[in-house]
Image 1 (cartoon, rainbow, N blue to C red):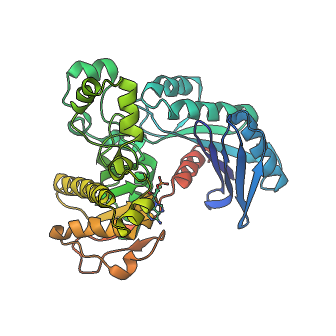
Image 2: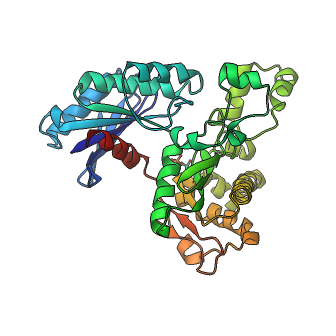
Image 3: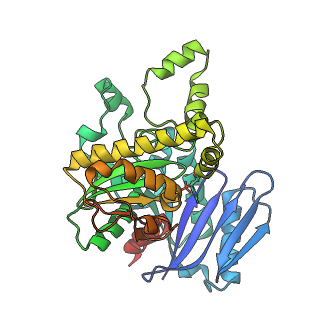
Length: 392
Ligand code: AMP
């Protein structure tokens, strides 16, 4: 059975088609610069990567082209073969604790939650509507990045602010990257051969979050109301003293929007290093003696260690620590520094294994009190699995 995983951004549309339940990827690709200049798309099929430049005025056109390519490449013979389409949705608030089949009410709720994810939720709706228009007979599901974190206790999701902010404005911690944390936690449990585990999952990429997962369920996570909490990220500040915001607004005469932009787009690794939000550039800077790059990296690593230590104490130990996403899968230096910082917990790095990139591997020695693993994330397959579960 053919199932499509879709991740719509404001000007992009990523897709991956699976043969289920085998989870075989048949074709994948991305449409970029939708609705802006110089649009194009790339497709990966049979080990080949094809790039085409076309007019992409909106997501519906992208979907029409996608469907035509599926037919041209004979991935499907007819549209009816596409049984399900799963859509990644960033913010499900406290409405959704699992994947749901999309109807008008679901779309209305995703829309209502756009205030919490102003860039992402409207894009998801655009993608959903485009898919519905082009493939009307497929079961369409919404897979929420926040759903995995809905098992948190209020002790962990509440903010110590006036209670009416929670009751009137739903102000609480919702988390992010839930589909990724869920995937790597599941995989880690498979490797450990049991479900009754205490895991710390570190999704560190351009955005980043750490989760505490007990028996496969999230008990705490570092992201907050929005995806700018917890860790220091590429260009996001993560946790800061809340009063910095009114203070800098007055001192530098900035508007709320300007401060928001500074904290989301000009902070993190970029803000401290002054060089880049990309950890590869920061590593290059360190190698050429740039002090601010070194400071940025130290701060970044320190924050990840802080969260691991916090969740270790909260869970009363950890059976494994997992690294995933762009930095977690690829940056041996960052992983090493984090694990070195955990030596007090008995973590011992396996130098040889840690020198690998992007593969599933244990990066600590047998003597290490907590095994640490790299597990490449796969949010797309989770979307396909959840969607398939509804159809089968
Ligand atoms: P993601 O958001 O998960 O796609 O992660 C993207 C980030 O991963 C990039 O901005 C880089 O900071 C980081 N990254 C990717 N490849 C490498 C690498 N080889 N070494 C260090 N960092 C990397």
